[in-house]
Length: 305
Length: 305
Image 1 (cartoon, rainbow over the protein chains, first blue to last red):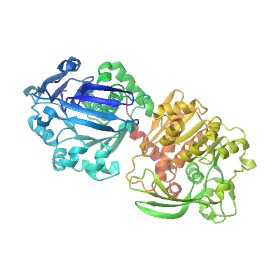
Image 2 (image 1 turned 90 degrees about the vertical axis):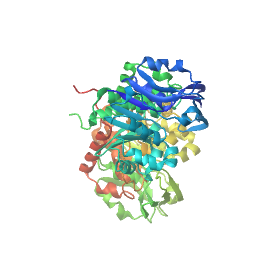
Image 3 (image 1 turned 180 degrees about the vertical axis):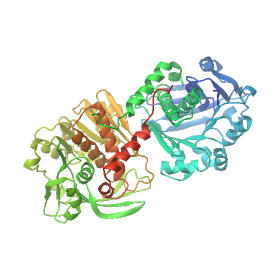
Image 4 (image 1 turned 120 degrees about the vertical axis):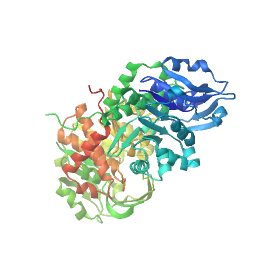
C-alpha cells in the first residue's frame, strides 16, 4: 500500500553528553522516511534549500523513498541546533533557522494523490489540512503536532483532528491540548473530537494506543546507551505507519504489532546520531528487536499445572 | 509458605486534589500486609504507640495478618502528614512525627523465626540487617529503601544488599544509589553488589524487574482516577511477595506473574485513601485486573496466516 508523508527535511546540529554532530540529516519527514522505508515504500513531500546536501539523501532514495515531492527552493534549508543534558529527556533548542521552510507550501505531486496511508508530520496544521485537500481520502490519515502549534494554532488543530483517523502526540502535548492531566481522559477528550485512535508518546516511558474500547501500551526498549533522542518520535511514527501500510490490516491485533514496530524503530533511532542507525539496520535486526519487546512484556496469566 | 514483613505501621493525614483524610491507617507494613494478605497469610513486625486505633487493624487481622509481632509501646504512633498536587507524582511531606518509631527495635517473635519469604520494608538499614540476624535464612529476602537512608546510611545499605536476593527502589533512588542515570546500568551496578534481582519502580510509568539475563517490564495500570498514591509502592511489594509466597515458584514465568500481581495491587491501592480499596476488593477483582494488564500489553509477534 502507498504511504505518503509530509514533513520537514532539515539539517540538525546536536550536542549530547556523548558527543556532537554538525549539519546532519534531520527533520520529521527524514526520520519518518528512514524508518518507514524498512517496511514499505514511502512518498515524501517536503522542502529543502539550495544548500542541502542532496547526495546524503541518496541512501534514503536507494531504499525506496520517492522524493518526487521534495522541492528544492532558493535559500537556506531548515536548520535546528539543540542540546541534550544528562537526562536526555528534553532537548534544549539553541537555534532554529526556518529558512525555506518558513514559506513551505506542500505540493503533492500528481502521482502521490491517491495514497492509502498518510502521515502528516509536525508542521503548521493549516498546511496539514491543505495536504488533505490535495489527496483522495486515504484509508488512514495520521497526524502529529507540537506545543508550538497547540499554543498558536489551536482552532486549526481542532479543525484538523476532525479529518484524521489518528493523532500522535506526547504526554505533555496531550495535557496541553485537552487540559486533562489524566492521559486516559485526555485521549477520550480527543476521540470525542474526531480521531478514532490516539497515540500518546511518553518518550523513555513508552507509548499508549487508545481506541474506543481498548488501550494498548508498549514500553520504550530499555537501552543501555541512549545516544541521541532526536527523531525518536518520528521514527516511531514511521515504524507504526510503515507496518500498517505494509500489512494493510487495521485489526486490533495488527495495530498492536504496528505500535511495537514503531517502538522498535524508535529504539534504533536513538542509538546513533541522525538517521545513521536507521540506515544501518536490516529486517533481521528489526525482527530481533520486536522479539525482544515481546520478551520484555510477555507473561502467562494462568499458572502452569 | 510463610511471609514475614517488617515495616512501619503509621497514621497518615493526606490531602489530594480530590479530598483529604485524617489519621487513617498508613505505613509500609500496613499497606504491604493489606495487599499481600489477599494472596497468602502475613506475619507483621512493627510498632505502634498507645494512641493507635487498634480496632482499625481488625480487618487486617481478620484476613490473615498475624500481629503477634506488632508491639504497642508507650508514646505516640508514627504520624505522617502529606499533600499531593495536581500531578500526584510526588508527595510533599508537611509533617513527620516519628513517635515510638524513632526507637523501634524489631523483635521477631519465636513463631516467626523461620519465614520462607521476608520483606524488609523501608526502615533504617541497620534494623533491616538486624531482622535478618533474627531469622533462619529464608528462601527469598527482599528489601525496600528510600533516599533518606541512601544519603545517611549508605555503608549500611551496601552491607544490607549483600544479604538480600532482591531490592525494590524507585528510579530516583536507583540513580542516587548507583550514580548511573541509565536504569539498565543502575540495575547491573546493584546486582554486582549482592541482589540477584532488582525491581525499579517508576510510579505511574510502571516497573522493571531486572535479573542477570532478562528484563521484564509491567506498566502501571492506566486508571482514569488516581485518588491517592500513598502506599502504591508497598502495595506493589505486597502483591509481588504475596504471590511468590503463595506459589513458591521462583521460575522466570512466575516472577513475571508476581510483578503483574504487584502492579495490580498497586493500582487498587491508589483508588481510595489509605488501605480502604485494598480492604474492599476480592479475589475476583484481582483476577480481572490481572487480565486487564494482559490485555494492555499483549501482542502477537507473528502475523496470522
